[in-house]
Image (cartoon, rainbow, N blue to C red; front, side, top):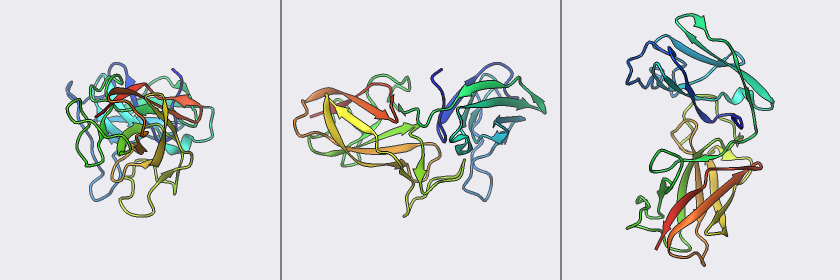
Length: 225
C-alpha cells in the first residue's frame, strides 16, 4: 500500500466488519445535516481516534472518507469497531495526495468517467473535441482552500474548495491546461478536474495521465473526435 491522503475515499476489506446485510447499506447523511454518518449497523471506523464518515458498510467491505485531520502526519492508526469491540489497529502511511481517477468500469482501468464540454458522457461514439474542456472525477487530491470539514458536502456556491496545488495532466502525451481543480460541489471526498484538451491531440482513445504532489494517478483514457 502506497498510502492514504486527507479527505480521500478509501475501502477497507476484511471479515465481520459490520452487522449490515451482505449486500451492504449506504448510511447517508445525518438527518437534518449536510454531513455523512460516522456510525452504521454497529460499525465505526477511526483514524487516530477521529471518526471516519461512512459511504458504504457491509460485513466484508467498508468505504470511508479519510479524515482531513490526518494532514501533516506520516502515518495513522486505523481501527474498526463493531458493537463496541475494536479491531487491532493497522498502521497506514499518510501522503499529501494519493490521486486516483474514476473509470467507467469501476476497476480503475480503461476509459475515465468524463463529461464533455456540453455535459454529455464521453464515450467512443461521443468523443470530446480538441480544444474543448472536459471534466474528470478523482479522489485523493489532497488539501483544499477554503478547507471543508470531514464528512461535509462540498459547497455548491462561492467560495468553492479549490486544490491548493494544481495537478499536472497530459493527454496523448501532450500537456493539458487545468482550468479547475477542487472538491466537486455537493459531494464528499470527490474532486473535479476540468481540463482543456490540447489542440494537437489525435482522434480516438487517447491516454490520459494525472500527477499530483509527486504521485501518479492510475492511467486512463479519454475519447477524442
